[in-house]
Length: 114
Image (cartoon, rainbow, N blue to C red; front, side, top):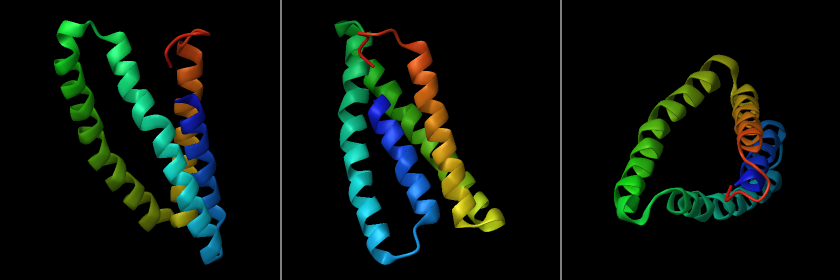
């Protein structure tokens, strides 16, 4: 997950500075790699941290949290885009992804599931 979120930050930073179509397409391909690195790892982390009898509820809560966070995050990105421009919106997204990766690094121990 740490690698995926770091890659996400780099992709968003690249999107902030991309000025050619080929750069956009290349970054979107790398974005798919980010998704592949994090989607399964996040679900595995939920499974690893939850007792087997509570996994169904834990996955429901996980997906509810992701879904509830997606709408305001997208709206806020749109506000940044409209007010500050696409470069700033993607730069802010990159900064937040890097901050999330650093928080993950700070709260996990070496050898932990994250």
